[in-house]
Image 1: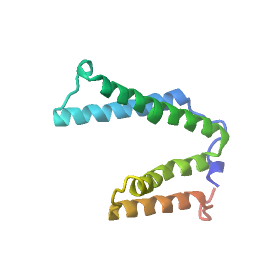
Image 2: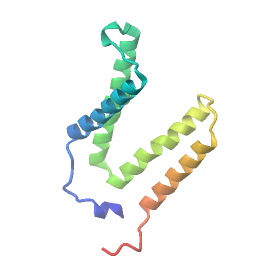
Image 3: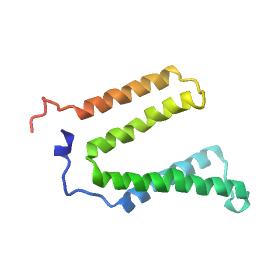
Image 4: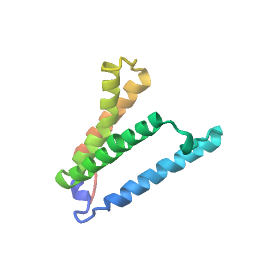
Amino acid sequence: YNDKLIKENYQPSPLIIFVVSNLYSILLILIAMIITGQTVNPYTLPIDAWIVIIYLGIFCTLIPFSLYQYASKKIKPTELNVITLMNVVVSLIVTTLILKEKMNVLGIIGSGLIIIAIYLASIEPNWILW
């Protein structure tokens, strides 16, 4: 239902979305560095650290973002949002099953709230007047 509320011709530039989201991340990291007083000199990082940084940049940022942009052209925006919101719940389940982490009460409550929010976002509200 919510797809009707989204303008069909509205498609923000993927590059702008990518840049803005990364700028927010950089800002938060800089704030954390200022608060904690910890700094990192990139010239003194060992090669292992650079391999991890490159791996994370490619497999946890570039590829997922590219797939998300591709999917945004193929499926409805509300379906894409449902998939995106389920990432948190799936991550919690996977870490519990595979990594044997303990699922605490807040994780269960948070997952339940996310599932309820997804359900509420996907139903057609009868009380909207437009």
